[in-house]
Image (tube, rainbow, N blue to C red; front, side, top):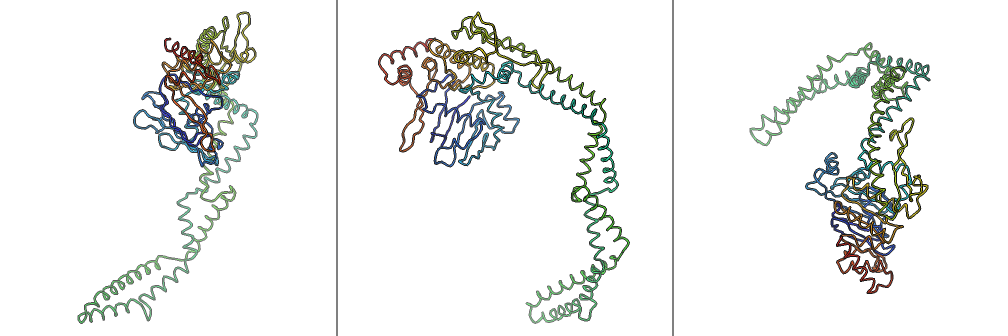
Length: 555
């Protein structure tokens, strides 16, 4: 559940630190006071799209941090462990920053995280039902997703989609093999010829380095011999060779060191230098003896280098990339081997289709059970929401060929009155009916969800009176097992809450800022009286507000 929310420089919020209780809480205030800003800030922390427009005017960046308490065996805890992002204890901290230039950064338990990661985790921590959720219910994909989530079928839907993609890819490959046999044969012939050249070349990266080193040595053999001979002469064999002169200087200093010991160190250094020169001369003689001018070997090495460069130019790569070209050609060769066999592809296609059909059948069975359950529950809720005799059905329409989401389409159908036939929700529901039906669906599907925190952002628009009171009671019952936050303008809903915050705009200097005030018992009476009476709060509206709160507490 959501424990704490910190917001800085977000829209009209300068700094807020909010500690959230459990149960059902109402966020109330005048229209435009900024109630939905809190929901938007939380949505940002949960991975919603970042926009530079959320940065408060004149500030460098906006920052939101949301702290959740997660159970040790909850889906969120398992996700954190699987992604190496778990923290000690049961806390989970999501932090998001948006700079004025539009760049955003996210963190999960102090570690950098992508927006996709935050969104994936956020779906396990909180479920936000926005102001336009009722209208989203008119879309077929939303209806299907709600039913699948209600039936706990999300993972199975993903599996069906994977099988469907594999099946369609093999079907495309089989058709391609049937229609492009000649082209595939030509490509295979060309590829075999190219691979034959590469295999005959036998290019090896380490051997290529050694070949280039040998070429440099052979190509400059005369120069190397000349330099070695000249160095030996300078060291030992010339008229003014360095080694004898050093030996003479060292011996003279050693003889004179009896008169002054300070000469010993210099003499020792000269003797060491002489020994190194003798060793260098010895190495150079051996090098000169081993190094031969071999025109035939030079020609062989140059021929090898030319062959490598010629093949590299043919493939438009550097010589070092030839092994990658060979690997890619071999991979394509394996691929062409399967593509050139339509019969084998047809068998693979059949197996992939069978796997899809089996997974889709399990999904169809699960959907049928979930649809029956959801239809019964929403129909019952409609009776409570002043739609007596109304009926709801989550209908499943078979698809002849199937699709990535299964073997049936999902359509929500409703009959608002007993005399009406069931028809698509998008065609028959009025605004008020859509609000009531939509809220029923959201509450019912949330009960079976895995998230511990539910946020309803003005989803009660379009209802009032007795229906609003029933909606408030539904949210209260939901809050007995989950944390429920509801942004609302309805006093009947707010009165059912276990706790209530008032949100208002306040002039601070030249700015207008959002302020949040937790309400005690007297504060709740005043706020609900305002919601009942409008501009002028009277003793009568206060009394009515007190009665609503007392009645809600006694239920």
